[in-house]
Length: 392
Image (cartoon, rainbow, N blue to C red; front, side):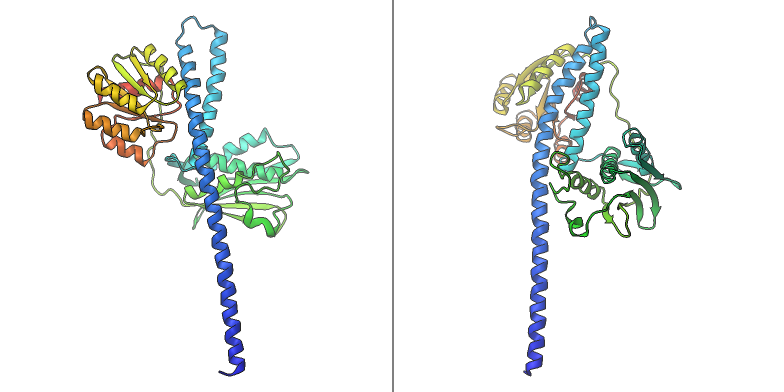
């Protein structure tokens, strides 16, 4: 082989090896980021689940106090504040569970222009007067299939980042339009922009350019997770300057989807019968027992799946319904449900959890469970679920 040809081959081989090495490094980086997201998602989901248990107690006792005919006006006003705060906390845990992919995100036909308008209305009361808000929402409605609360969170997070990038003032832009490639949303600012060397890192968990105590580095990670969960993509544009523009592209909603509003009965319906509550959280058992008693039911509360199965096996003829938490430390709720069904195929079981309803819950309902009660719940929601489960 001529020396020149051999040198060319060596150069080509070295170039290919270097290209493969860089590709392997890129894949390792992607794998590391995915593993971080999975770990964070698991941790966040667990925290949200535990928090929903605490909110069950807060909302449950608040609904019990509302039933007290001797409660004063001041008490009722305090309950309004407590319930509104707890509902807001519940919405936040739902968003965390959405990031953690623990359950179904709500899917409905959403006009992103309306959601952006809601974000703009909020920003008008919160951004400094030296920041001009430029809202460009002219044209036809821009519908996507998604969760309006999650999309609101995405747009607001990006807008607040844009605000923080303009400490001396500037223009914050919110825009939406339908294009050939889908529904395009733009959130932009006229700040200093994002340096090219860190643009690829802005979606990494815990990466932030903000001073300590002013940012966790999780905002854009959550944004990216939600956008991908909506089958969309997010891109960063910093050229030409000034500023940064986040472009979000979502597939359009091509079909109308009927949206059934969730309703809660104005007054809880009373019932009768014995209800076995199986939940490892003492605070949940306590409030469930109080609410069941107030509704006219007799409550038996146990914190162990094994104890619950032993009790049911001995007293099945006395139990009208079982409220079963799916996350139990000894025997899982799924396993206990299967044991109860094997012992008594006609057992009435109402599933409950601090996690959202997912495919595994759907499978249990298909197998005979009488419904799913999402934590946190109030007495009216408990009453509705019990009434439906008793009739089933």
